[in-house]
Image (tube, one colour):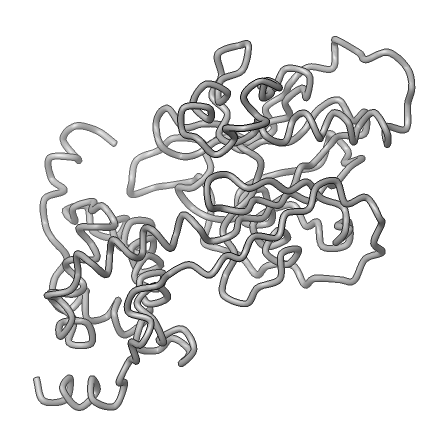
Length: 336
């Protein structure tokens, strides 16, 4: 985006636009999604994504907003949320606490040589590489979340390849992360993200070049920010987000399951398979909205459970007794 276009982006969303976003993403959500502020703020977050990814493309003057700024505007402007504006600081704080504890699932995709894995790079400048993964929706099964997130971030359907009992799992801080292993994927497979402004690059990376936790630190301080920071860079200087806890167990898995016992091929280097083409905001060609996700198919399972952690994770304590009074809100709306 040019400096001139940035200077034009100074207009806040109108009351009409905010009402439309509130109606579309909050009021019309399923009843079960309106039973706590934690769930409601996930809906507000979806509205924020839509505003940043779609609405701003249609109006070059609209200002880009952080999620906190957008949430404040929604609570100030929308009749459905306005009654709770005095509690917004506590609501948002509880949401961020809840969010970092929501379980994450995804996949470790290996090529046919078992020497390279597929990683995705975030959108923002200076973003890290990571395995394709994301947070679970309410009541969503782990393997279904993994299929959905891999599809959204890479366009690759793993539904008929996933083995529900074959995964690596760790707990970082208070967050459980589970990655299913999908091995033997052809290197010529076409990959492309199915969402806008989330992934900037997709590439094969050599497993033996990924950062790995030292025995000294991983055994007793895996959840610390200092430990994570020290292991998030590889030998080449590339940044990797939360890759290191999985590398050691992954290498063990490969040594047991690799179809070839031959020496590794050093010429089998990392390769970029998709990269965003930067364009102006009015003519983005870096992806489309979310396409229809693949239908999950049943798959055979194996007994290769590499690490199992079952924390008692019930995040989101405050505002637990909140109930979204839809009828009262609609009556207030009609009276405006």
